Length: 378
Image (tube, rainbow, N blue to C red):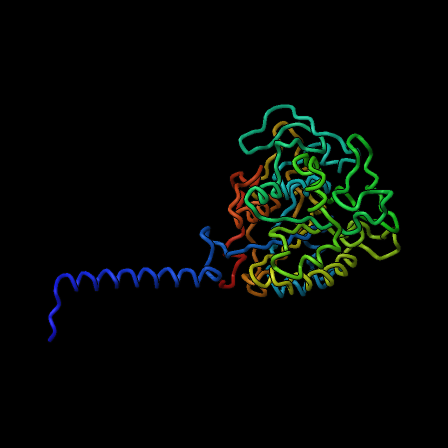
C-alpha cells in the first residue's frame, strides 16, 4: 500500500474542495432558468396585462356569458381568480391604481373630462398617497414604468386605435393639452381610442419627456412586431383595447357589436399571439381583468385617499370582476378563491422585478399572487 506525505494529503484535499466548489457553482448556474425566484415566486420576467371594461364577475364569467372564449376556454388553459376586485368607479381611477397605487380622487372618479393638473392639499402619507384632486399627477408621484426604467428594465403601453385620427390625437403618448377638454371621451367611427383607459398619460413623470413617452406609449399595432423576439418584448406590457373591443360600448361607433362579444373578438386575436411569443413561453404571465364591476364591494382592506371620497363612490370598492391568468407556471384549470384587487396585481408585478410597492400596493391586507395561482412547477 502506497504511503502519502502530509504535503501530498493537503494538496489533494485542497484540490478536492476547489473541484466541489466549481461543481456546485456550475450546478447552480445551470438551474437558474428553472429555479423559483428568491422571493418564492416563479422567475417571471415578462408580464402582459389586458384591461377590459365595466362587467361584474357573474356576467363575464357566468354560464351565460356572451364571451365564451374569456369565460370558458381561457380558464381551462390557466387560472381563474373568482375573488378579484376593482378598486373604484368609474374607469380612470382603476387604471391609475393599477400602475401607481394611487387611490381614487373626485376627478379621476369622474374620468377627467377636462385634462387638468392634480392639486395637492398636503404631503404624501406613509404609503405615498398624495391627497388632493385632479388628473395629471406631479412628477413626485411615480408609476411602475418609472420603477422599471430605474432598474434597467423595459416597459410598453399598447393602445388600440391611438393616432388613427391625427386631427383628434397624436400617434404616440396621446392626451389633451393641459386644461383642455378630452376629445377622446367620444368615440368616432374611425378612432375609438380613449385616453381615460391609458393611465400613463396622467403622470408628469412620463409625459414631461415627450420623446420617452412617445417611445413607450404607442399604438397596439406595434405589439405584434415587439412579440417577435424575447429581446424586443418589454418586461411589462400594458394593453388597452379600443372602446369597442374592451366592452365599454355595447353599440360601437363603427357599427360593430361591442360589449362582451367585442371583448371575445379581441382576445381571440391577441391572446394566441401573446402566448405563442418567445418571451411568454420562456417566463411570461398574462393577466386579463376588468377595471370595475357594477357593485361597490371590495376586499383586501380597501382604503380611501386621505381626506378623499369612498373609492367606490357609493361603497368601499369597485366590485368583484374576476381575472384570468395564463403562464407556463400555472397549471391548466386552476381556480383560486383568495381575495385580490388591482393593488394586489401591482404589488405582485413589482415583486417579480424586485421593486418596492407603490401607494396602496404596499398597504396591509394586500397580497401577492401565491401558490394558489402558480400551481405548475417551474
